[in-house]
Structure formats: C-alpha cells, structure tokens
Image 1 (spheres, rainbow, N blue to C red):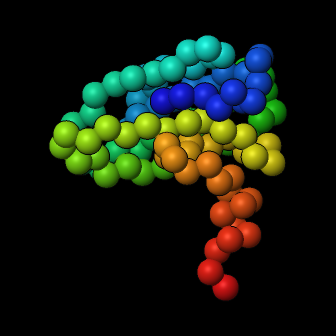
Image 2: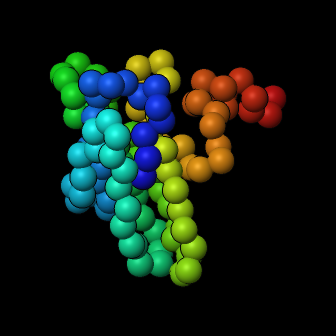
Image 3: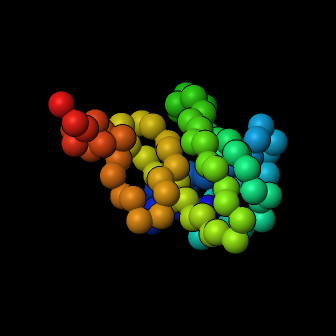
Length: 99
C-alpha cells in the first residue's frame, strides 16, 4: 500500500483488510503484508480530520504467488485505492466508460 505524492503532507489514512484495522499510513510511509489466497476487502478512510468522506473499499481476489500493489489517492473529496499501473481517478474512469 502506497500513497500518491500529492495525497497531502498533513493527511493520513486508515487501512482495513477484511474489516480489521491494520495500519494508519502517514506521509513517507507504506504498508506491506502477506495475505492468503482468496477474496479480500481493502478499505480506506482518512485519518487526519473530521468531515471527510466515508470509507471506500475495493475487493481483491488474491492468487498464490502474486504481488499486488495499491496506491491511496484523492479525487473530488474522495479517497480511494488504485491498483498499480492504473492512475485513472474515478471521475476519469466515468468519463472513459463505454457508452
């Protein structure tokens, strides 16, 4: 789990895996962990101050021997996780969707 550089110098986020809090990630920090194969729910919410968005989640189907990297990002007051190599914000994904 990584943070995009423009995430904010004074913003951190909480990470939950399968409903269990595992880390609070601040500027300059990452989180690494091993997960067993199978379906897992990754959830993020800001840890820095009140009034920010509800948690957002992404489901990951972990396969044995694979490495998964996600980056925490902001878009339109929304914190979300983006898989490595995918740098589209939810707004841009919506714009590019099939019509």
